[in-house]
Length: 88
Image (tube, rainbow, N blue to C red; front, top):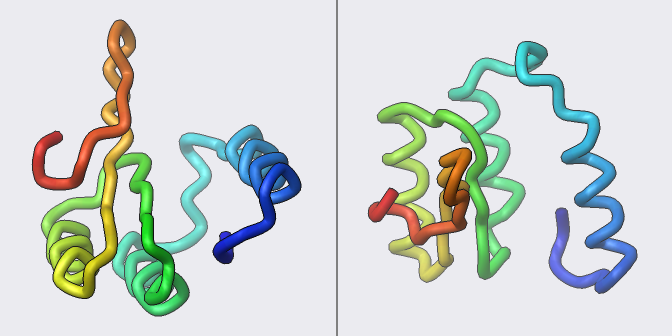
């Protein structure tokens, strides 16, 4: 999502998350990562949900070098958390 928008943006994000189907990837991960990298170049924060592989690590390291804060959703059933990338 683009920067800004307050409660409307938060509502849109929750709506998008509620529609995610775990077996319904429509893009190969490499294309998705490329899109996120280009689309979110000016976003101060990127939150990653789900597996991203070695290619993902390369993209997220590059984002951090640009000064972006990258976080990963640690989906532990008992203690889920959003942790800084590199510490998950």
